[in-house]
Image (cartoon, rainbow over all chains, first blue to last red; front, top):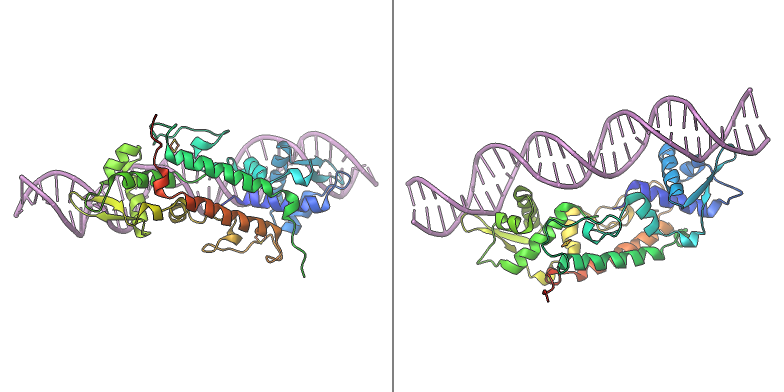
Length: 141
Length: 141
DNA sequence: ATATTTCCTATCAATTTAGTAGGAATTAAA
DNA sequence: TTTAATTCCTACTAAATTGATAGGAAATAT
Ligand code: FES
Ligand code: FES
């Protein structure tokens, strides 16, 4: 399971994609109302995403948030990496958060590592396919 | 990331696959020494796996654990489900642990749900490929 | 000036994770 | 029949993480 933080983030970002532009930024409280997310929590989420280069903001009255790059370049893998950390399922196959395994004598021949390395690679590919623009709701019939 | 519990479990199960039979069960402390896992913690893990139908045990002196079914029928998805819960990344796409999303008005058309449903399905397929017998270390050259 | 917003830091309660403690029940074998 | 070795069971606990909230300071449009 991903954290609620990441789930909130994804919904908020989809909302920004649908409604915001740099000329028309959307304030946090609006998104919070639409998506039923606690406003103060969402505030910190959007700020974290800004620091990571995903969202951008305009301060003061008539301010708010919008996307810092095209929705086609923001995918689930990136969002999860920013808010939940590594995609890798065990520390020895994580590039950024690598940690040695105490259980294993020889990392080079470890079969468990081999498997999880493959799983991580394929999971990333999967998640990269889901960019924000592919997350909008299907039209109701 | 998966829990340490699940990681310990995978290593322990591979060890059982390599070394144990119903006539020659391996005691917990032996596995704990080999895999450098705290023995009392491993005890509870192997018991949980037994209750889930993965391991079997023989009590008393000369007792220990062994696999309850062929290694080819025990895969990573099953182990993670037993010890870490759902594979699904959000609650609304989990079959066993389903929970409604407060953020979403119409679950039927929700694009986020659609994506995570696909991700779960594909992740399960990926993990099902990794049965215990495919997790043994590669031969050193 | 005023209203509205982002931005910042700190704090906090609840939950989950990663174990530990202490022993009861079972079994093999001396 | 005692002893040693094991699984099994329940309860407990410390540390970390999660999911927030509190209380403003700084910026900006009108
Ligand atoms: S080296 Fe990481 S699981 Fe073996
Ligand atoms: S219904 Fe679960 S994310 Fe929309």
